[in-house]
Image 1 (cartoon, rainbow, N blue to C red):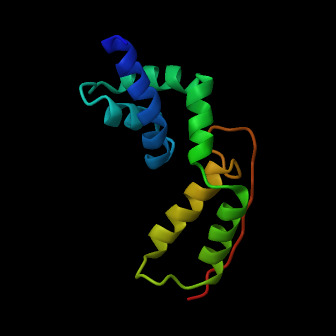
Image 2: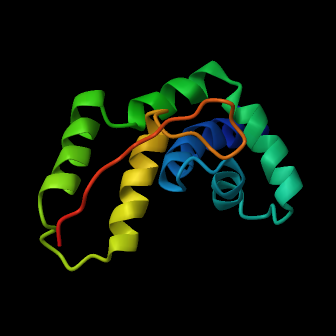
Length: 122
């Protein structure tokens, strides 16, 4: 197997892990995997190409928690006090990320609007 093919396979295996770890930020994930790339535009283009590949999409889906697991985490975060000291900002970020990963909370530039209301007891 040639060097280029090995490198491409490595990137295709490592990118999904970094993509999920970086909160679905393809640009940062690509720059983490390919340390020599410093330009955001290049990283974004390469990340977009990777995200269009079926094998990369399948690996990302396999890394995401199941619907049941994610629903339990969200319920627990809303109902229970955290065992570790955590700020409201951290808890909010966790909930926001969880909802975005499941497609329940869209970015600012989308046409769909979702209202989510919850109360946090202190």
